[in-house]
Length: 310
Ligand SMILES: [Zn+2]
Image 1 (cartoon, protein in one colour):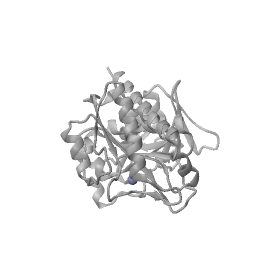
Image 2 (tube, rainbow, N blue to C red):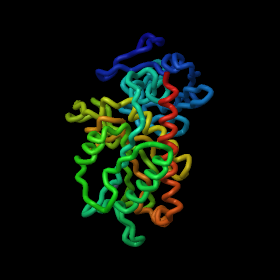
Image 3 (tube, helix red, strand yellow):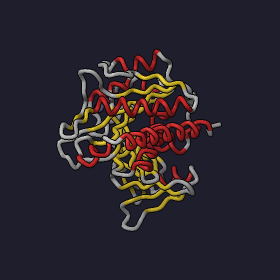
């Protein structure tokens, strides 16, 4: 680039915005950390670290996956405008978006069930479908005690097809959808928590490096993009603050249960049952209660944030 002060540039057919200027508009200080590899935006309550050429940023230390890597030009760091709109604005200035959602009826989706057992750990006799239902029931109890209406996509060990789950949420006119899962990996050291929100249109999901042909499709769930991000941020933050362990961040995926939702929704992976230490912990009811409590706290924080929007 020839002009150092350009707020918006084009790269690879996309618009990028200058983070120092964008941060300034949000009342944040902006500077490179020593070594000039990481750019920081900072205000009294918020610290955002963004690596050069990276597709993840750290908002108050929570990893949040972006659609596109950042780029440097003339010593300035640029973020895809789409990421500014889908990540930073929803969390920092949600008042920028119209139609703030109500929050009265919450749909809890206990992953798997019946003939679909989900992830398992035979040594510890753990089945994902049992863990998801247990945490879901605990969460339901807390939310109802607080006065929310709760609808479960299943409340017993039954098989519910994936496509039925968002249908249940939409028919019940849910205001929030939370899908509860546990993970498993061949590498038994894998551990930690992650939250998935629906990938915005034209972007690659977090496990892919570049958008593919199908990624230009827009789903009903994309109408909720800003609120999906805001919800995902608060739930992931609460989860890792309460539980500790590895923060795998807020990621993006086009999961079937998220694509066709009429309300904000996220899918959570509450740990790897394939990890012996995690497996040992999730066998304890006290631990599963803490998991449910952290989700409850995250939902309450999301609701409080919505209420602060004028
Ligand atoms: Zn699962």
